[in-house]
Image 1 (tube, helix red, strand yellow):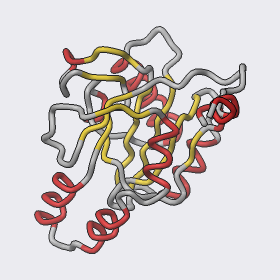
Image 2 (spheres, rainbow, N blue to C red):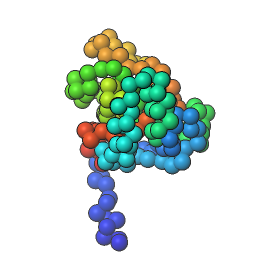
Image 3 (cartoon, rainbow, N blue to C red):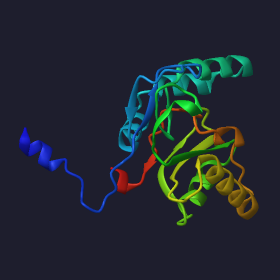
Image 4 (cartoon, rainbow, N blue to C red):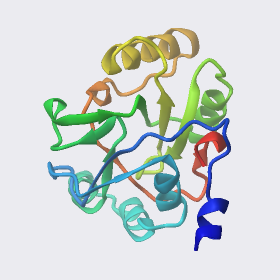
Length: 191
C-alpha cells in the first residue's frame, strides 16, 4: 500500500491542484455535497458519468422541456472554490479557477482558438451539455478578483476575436453543469 502511495506522488514542478465544490443534481441545489479537483472533474466528464443525461438532453426539441431537463438532471461544480453554500458569501477556500462559458459557437473552432492563447493557463476545456458551447476553465494568477478577471478576459476575447462569453457566468459562485465529453481537455500540469 505504501508503494502505491509513492507512485501517486506529484512531480515537484507540478502545482498542487486547488479544490472546488461539487453539487448534486439540479441548478437549484445550494448545499455542496463534496469537493473535486481538476483531474477528478476531467475523469467525471471524460468517462461518461453524465452520458445518459447529455445524450437525452440533445434529443429534446421543445425549448421549455430542454431547459427544465438541463436544470434538473445534471450535477455541477463551482470552479471558483470550496463553498459552505452556493452564494458568494459561502466561499471558504478560493481556487483561483475561473470558468468562462461560450454558448452557440462553433465548438471545434472555439476550442482551437482558446487552446492557442498562451497568455492564459487553461486548466480544463469541455463542451457544454447542449453540444453547442464550450466551457473554458482558466487559472487566475493575477491580482484581479474573480469577476474583474472574468470581465477582463471577456473584453479581450470580444475585442480581439469577436468571441463573446456569457457575462452571467462571471459571478463568483456561478455553477457549471458537468456533461459527458470524451474530448475534454486537461492541462497535463493538473493531472
